[in-house]
Length: 457
Picture 1 (cartoon, one colour):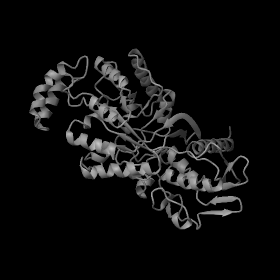
Picture 2 (tube, helix red, strand yellow):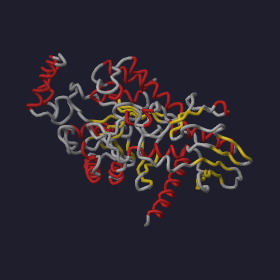
Picture 3 (cartoon, helix red, strand yellow):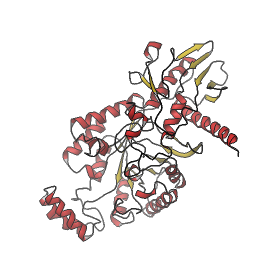
Picture 4 (cartoon, helix red, strand yellow):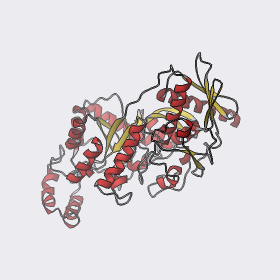
């Protein structure tokens, strides 16, 4: 295939992928196609009415964060903003007025909102980036969204909400999809026990830390007993064994928790000390499954560029679960340390046969890395093709908000306000508030109170 054929094929695949998203988010009766140079055409079979949407592939094919960013207030033109404020318009230095107009049976949108969706959802912005943090992660502070102040907004969802209004005016008889706001909670099982799975030397180090840094003398004295009785199951008194509490909290609020387990060691300093095949972990997973919660994969530290190792670790997880009589209709998970490289990491999940990945947020700042809080089909922006994998964007990791190395908002009202703000933005676009909260950060009452307030807000 020559370069021109590749570009044409890639463009066709991109339009087909965008059409799939529009069918999921708006209506299965919509058909998206190329409309000459500079526009895409949205139609419904049997109707003379259509919508023409500005298309600027050269703008949104950039792997970088140097695009301009204008702003558009829909209210003066008779449209409604999902968040009640003007919308950022990445890729545009200015926007025409009116931005949306009707000429005869055609609605014309003079902004490439679908190009924006493609750019954000595919993470085209991140391809080949070298401005990474010490864990090889693309940081929020380097992103266009952070630089232009819209990281904490579901910008793709906001623009699709505008498109939905245009679709509704163009075809009033068309029933649009009505997604429901949901809360998705997941827990990366990095350290299931403070004392279990430790060598004698590490146990002594942990006990010393309990006394010298945490001033928990009683816990240090109990540690050897907890350690010795953690061979077949996690000890109920281990501070990090918060799993039953987590599940009970989720059940009170009719939420299914997902627990993601590490199944390999590619960098011992950052990977788990446990083996997923250990009797205590098997017992934990059986309990999770019995109570109706989900088990998933948390690939080890150095797998994010190695699809073959992700697939291998997924086989370990599923084989272990099968041995314990654990069957699930859907398998998914999240990358350890939120390490991600576009598009290599996508293919790890694809090769593993996993249904979804829920990695994509930034470690250093919560928000909408993909511009959406809705699940969507994955897309490789380099090869220009859709994948079977689904992306479930992560909106907030608790460490991003609480930890001193990130936002450092503590575990009180300021942190709660930030979580609620993000949750309300998800609710405004009928999306999913996807939250990661580690079992290790629920040992104290203040942490548990904050967590429950976030769930119930």
